[in-house]
Structures are given as C-alpha cells and as structure tokens.
Amino acid sequence: MKIIVDAFGGDNAPFEILKGAEQAAQELQLDILLTGDEKRIVQIARDQEISLDRMEIAHAPQVITMEDDASAVLKTKKDSSMARGLEMLVQGKGDAFVSAGNSGALVVGATMLVKRIQGIKRPAFAPIVPTAGGCAMLIDGGANVECRPEMLLQFGIMGALYMEKVMGIQNPRVGLANCGTEAHKGTQLQHEAYALLQASGLHFVGNIEGRDIPLDGCDVLVADGFTGNLIIKTYEGVAIALMDKIKTMFGKNIKTKLAAAMVLSDLKKMKKEFDYNEYGGSPIMGVAKPVFKAHGSAKAKTIKSALRLTKQYVQGNVTQEIADSIQV
Image 1 (tube, rainbow, N blue to C red):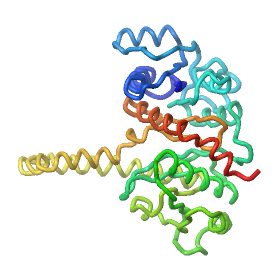
Image 2 (image 1 turned 90 degrees about the horizontal axis):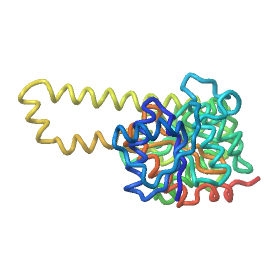
Image 3 (image 1 turned 135 degrees about the vertical axis):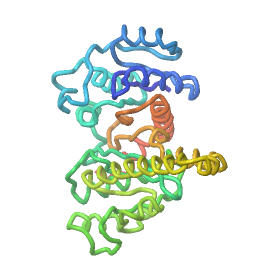
Image 4 (image 1 turned 45 degrees about the vertical axis):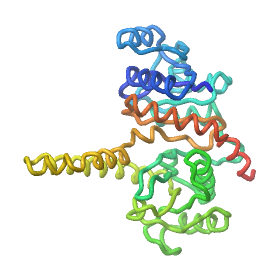
C-alpha cells in the first residue's frame, strides 16, 4: 500500500512530518510518496538522520500556508505540496493522501480535484474523540457550517460505516447533537434530521446533549459543521486544561509527588486516552478517494497515527462501502 503525504503541511513541517512518515514506513510496512521541495526534504532527512527507506519524493516547490485562501490549492498554488499530492491521488499514484495543512484548502482540493462520491451532498470532517467507553466519531467537525437535513443523514451513514470498518465497532450507535434529549428540541434542522435518522435503519439513539458526549452517549455524533467545530475545540481545550490542573496538583509538594508516583502508570494511561495525537487525523468523509486531515500542529506521533488510520481506512474499503450505501 502506498500513501501520499504532504511533507510541508502543518505548523511543524517538514521535520515532524518526515519523522512520522519514517516511523510509519518502518512499523506499519507502508510505502510513502512525499510531496514537497525535494532538496529540502533530502537535506533535512540527512541533517536529522531520518531514513527515507520505502519513500519516494515528488517535487513541489510551493507551500500552502495556514493563512492562504482555501482557493489557493486550485488557483495561485497549483505547484504546492498539497495540490500535487491530491493530483497524484487522482492519477492513481497512491491509495490515499494525508496532510496536516490548511483545512479549508484541503476540503476545497478534495472536493474539486478528487471529487465527491456520487450522491454525496457535501464532504465532512470526521474527527475521533475520546469518551468514557473508548471513543466516538464527530461528524461534521467543521467543513460545512450550514447544513440541510439530508446532509446530516448522510453524515450518520458515513460515520457508522467508518466506526464499523476502521474502529471495529459493530452496529455503532448514532446520535444527533442537540440542546436536549427530547425529540421536539432544537431547530427545524434538528427536527427534520431526527426524523430522517430515525427512519434510516441506522442504530439511532436519538438526541445527545453536550454533557453526554464524553459519557459514551453514542459512537457517532452527527452535527452541522458549526456546532461540531465548537464541540471539538471545546473538547481539546478542556482536556488540555484538565491535564494541566492534574499536573499542577501533583507537583505541589513532597506528599503530592509521592502520591503521583504511586498512580503514575494510571496517569499516563489517562493522558494517552485524551491525547489527540493518538487519533492522528480526521478523514474527509464523502470524497471519492481516501483523504485524511492531520492536526495542524501535528508531531511525528500524530502523523504515524494518521497513517495507521489511513491504512485501516483503505483496507476496510470504506469509500466503496459509502458509495454502495448512498442512494443516488
């Protein structure tokens, strides 16, 4: 399996991207096609002693920054590492594409270059979040701030397939993000989406309030992109604040430090469960070939995790499963 990786996407590119790609190539037995400035990639790999075994490089001199307009991938920066990677995916030179770069540009590029699966209204970000029972998918995480009810239905279908094929959850529970659990709560969008999801044949468990998301209320949380992005960013902020508080509490004095030593393994386990680097990336669900968005501040660990999930996505044939499940 060959995965195309944007070597210059993200705040910590290219070093962390190259390091993560090296780890994935060695540990996951993947072939990787890097896109970006070839001279810089080779120089950094040499200087940092990063092995490029099982890797190829496709030269792309331009970089799409986080400040660039989303349309840059189609207009002003057609020779960027992101645009070149998406083009090579379309050409069949890789099985999937991973980038930690500009989210808006990646969605535009995936939609306009890779194209949507026939029948899909809009692609959606689908990040994985930790819960008391393990993890859940949030879809949409911010690609579509305004949605129609039929889009939310498709999000539920795509999310359920991903959780079954990639995360191994049989008959995943699908919930609808809302301001109350009662069926009459929410706006017209939630009312109509509720009815569609209830009649869909999915394992629909109804409306999910914000407090029930981390308490394992469902396996797939369906939301419009505006709501979903608020949820995911709040999730990340609370997790960071909580871990900082715990670290401060256990570092106060000798007594608390001794207590920390006694529960150190449990603390490390909890930190790992709430670390977004463990979940790697968010698939852009609904496009015709696998495209993954890694976190903008991705470290090597994040990239390796993103490549692991991408490999499972390809092996699960999720794109074709979605195409077969959508009625045109």
